[in-house]
Image (cartoon, rainbow, N blue to C red; front, side, top):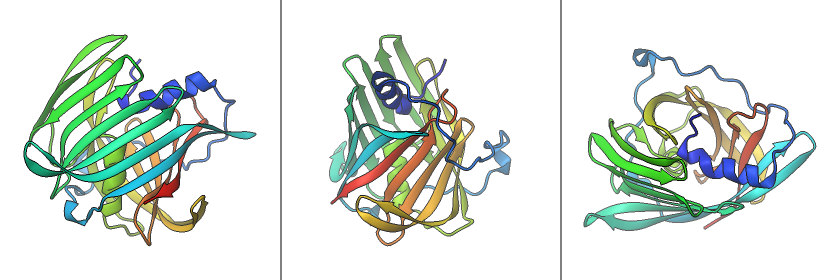
Length: 262
């Protein structure tokens, strides 16, 4: 069974907290991405990294069931000016706290936010490191199930990880009905691949958050494996909420809500 690296911390935290009761599906069904990449819309990336700003974002992670909302941990993103290989870069440091803590460090090129280097540590035993060049990536993972080498070719439209996706959504222009294509890196326990993805702006919505009421763009990222939905605030573009169904648990919804921003 394949489980994407980005989902490992979530699955471990949910398992440690106890499997919640089946929840009502709160997301709108979206068709899977077509296998024929010629049918995909124009490419969205790269974006203008010069528009990004340093920031600190804190999220509460929840699992929603019909009769309760269970908090399973917190997630912090720190976006900072940095350097990589002696050149200016953006650094995204991600920390998840809960039953199984994890940390991610992702370097992006300063001008166009291309991935440069990504490392991740999950708990005490699982690790990942990936180096990116202009057209390929290489690295590996290690953990209780064994080691894996990763070597893949990629284009300039690659999304590497949840934090990069959320940063890109801050900078992309949004309008209802806009549809763009991306490539999504999936790092699995047994194998890794790059799959086609579609970013669509489905509408606008007012939502209540711990920071107040926000008017948001509702944006979906659809891959052959499913849909993640994002609420991106219009006034100060930042992802204030995300929702997705948990893998292999139909109807159980994982949610992240912004609780602090600096």
